[in-house]
Length: 383
Length: 133
Image (cartoon, rainbow over all chains, first blue to last red; front, top):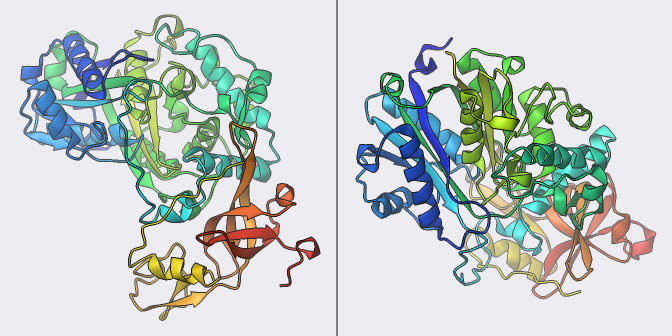
């Protein structure tokens, strides 16, 4: 095992804010999540000396703004921005900061409220590299994911049923999670019969749009041993990007997960086959299939049949997105922090009906932009 | 069906692109040192790092790499595609024409600069389009 990432920093607290349609602001939701995560960690705001977030109501210096809202004065800040993957990256940076002695209690927070808080934004003209995609007025990011999904189906002679199976598995897990936004069972036919958005992606191939926030609290191992929650250790991490705009994506069926996953697994000294539970960013159904293959869970074209056969669903041997995922549980825009929260809860054995028995090693994986940037974390409870 | 095409803020990187469209051309930078065509337009060559770039006109031929039909809430639809230009770069475009719905991966398409302001649409190549190569 690689010495610099050998379980010296732990996640001591995790929490969500209110979820769904909350009537609250992004600031309020982020504050809720932070104070709840600190409370379960047995800590308080006055203990926090590091703060990380990628976004606060779209304004610059988000960690500074949120620290002010919380009334804290951090001496460690991180606003690393990889879209939905940001928080996994910030968690790894925070672990390094704690190991280096630059901080003792670091919080990673996030919230958005797209169902409740939408101040008017003046329409800006197209500018920068994005203008060559946005000039067509097509909806993004779904158009980008649909282009990748079409190519995936074409390359593997696969049918949209394989995409739909990802949504069905997510909903089965959501049925076991009281906090999930949509819990009623669905079938492949339900997905294929839902409104077509961007062929081959239907409405039920797309993530939810909900309010929600999350927070995690990191401390050094020694301190974690004195706190109430079973510590979950950060064992490995990798970041990678391959492009921003989908027209610059080198291979529409292979994501940066190939690089970020390989780095994270190598750092943790484990193989993907050792992982007990997977929390994989599911902005769209296709995101999961491409990520499974890029992480090396299976070969090209094999993810769809694996999901369709139930391997990732409750009772399967590749339990995945056990909270119901962005497809059925919660998706405020940058879902990545929830992959960490659920991984931690699984490793604590605290997931009730949806608990994966004996889970000791988890992989959490975020994807940002248009399949653009990824961040992978390996978390463990027993190392 | 109503389509909304956002307007662009033309800056030093993009002004030659939009100006050429106004004259019916799709232009892009080509590296004077290594010959690589660059799209989207940039200030440095992504292959060799050179800053010596010259704007040139694309032939207007491309091959479809992937596509999606966008379905609008009111029942309208249109086709967005990733196409590989004959010069090498890949770009996003809209496929227009009566037979746009017949688009397939691997299909040959031809440039059709049209609209106000003009944009680089493509059409399926072939005699049905009434366009020569």
